[in-house]
Length: 117
Image 1 (tube, helix red, strand yellow):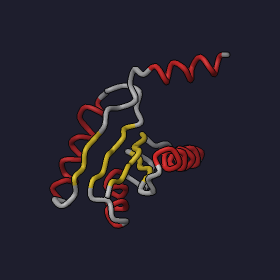
Image 2: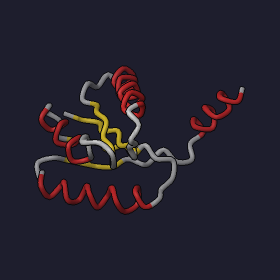
Image 3: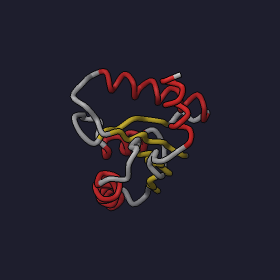
Image 4: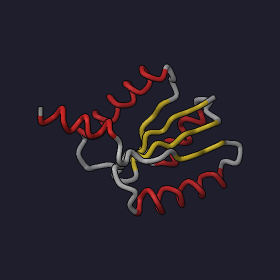
């Protein structure tokens, strides 16, 4: 069964978790998948490993980690892959992969245009 983990940077502000929970609900509705969770690199107990383990407990065996980052900085190119490698060693029965970060996508430009419109 496939699980989706949306990974954000994290923040000390509680509002970020409300926003992420809303995005998780929207992804569930759009994909029809119920194994969708959020995780954070910092400032939350729901870190990357906790998110993967939570999905695994719910039955996910193929987990796609979606980095919610615009740029492919050090978190995307080094920190997340390094952490995922360590998690994969602890959970050899799971297939864990990381998707491309948000990056340069026309849909983000559409959101910007909508905001100024």
